[in-house]
Image (tube, rainbow over all chains, first blue to last red; front, side, top):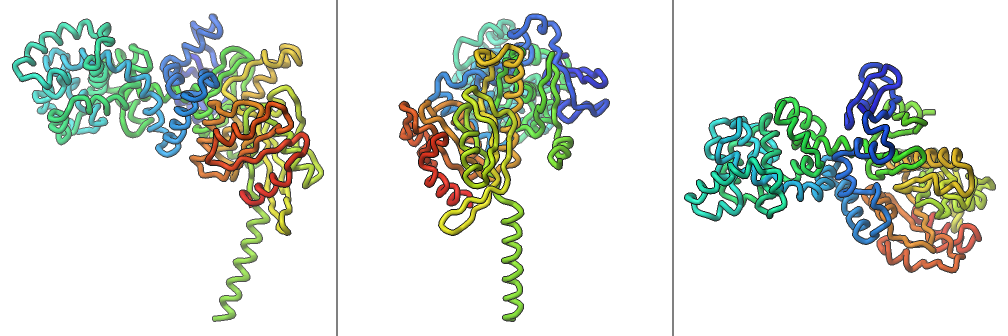
Length: 328
Length: 212
């Protein structure tokens, strides 16, 4: 609970978005940053705690630490990012930023995902659906019936080229892989899909792929699916927090909801998390007197931190109070 | 009909004048710390209003709150251009109090660092909300290709704000205006020394042209 309202004492989890519009309980706009376990450790600890996923985000999108070091590459990327962001809007931003990180991560899951679909070994059919839905960008179609068809779609790219007979074999393999899943990531491009799909599965519980889109995916190259999936899902992997995913699996419905609200488009737990983390990364207090700033976030957010105080306290100027101040 | 048209024209002329007088364009002076933004703002303000805008210092982050000088009337070719100048804190991605400890004690350095960070947040917020045009000031003796410069100019471009790049500190030996022109060829670069007052005529010509 790194954030706490200094007025009523309400606590907010790391990455919580609630406080951005003022404390929901008392309306206060002064909060205190109080890293729990990490706090004691000092600079490095808080950073990690705060960032989590955001750390990944920073690397990909941004400004924070990398800075002047490699002007060319960074600058170019930053310029592109800026333009993308500007033209596309915040939702897109998150995607683009996360993309870099996520891909690597995505790779890992692949093995697991596919097995799931084919084998049906995974707990819920919903999971299979989910996989499909992710690529599709998460629409609500809610069709359990299509389950059976799914598996083929889910298969790895490599498998797809092979005749059906092989698939069976693959399935078995996959089953084995599923247990290993986590370690596999590094293997190859094929493997990459697994993570996405896993993530997808988590999301799937709350979402279903539209019937229309399913066939298309099957026929087409799996990769395309994956790619599209990458954008929306990757966040999870990129974030580097396996935990969120796990949580999602535990309590599927809730997560799906939450994710959707912020982006309004493509629900993905990872994405949401990345977005939240990003927002809180506008100013990172490394330690008193040392700050790292995410310029894009500072620019993008309507509310902003107007006062940093000792001991991790800070004041957020939420839009309403900003307008008042403005009038002055 | 003629009377009506004439009346309409005169109303619209009055309205135009009203708007131009009420809302001079707000020009933000942006750039990294120690590029000479406040020196430039002071130079412009002194030249046209007789007042200064803020204190200048060789220690980075002297300007930690955005400061505005309103209704600066710049005369060019018989025309008057009225602008509000907003001198903003230097934008950076890292603020470290240890940068200041040579010039002050640790406590003051930490406070300066904190205020500078707030200043960057404020500058970015102004950029989003309250600026009609940007003068982007660079130290021409420094490498202009940095993440901060690229990102800020990208943001400015994305908002379609008119922007002039000022290659400041041309009085320094290491100054290279060309390096800045090459870095941002899509924008007009004006060389100057705000400190020495060099090339200010061209500066004002361009301000009038871009922001008038």
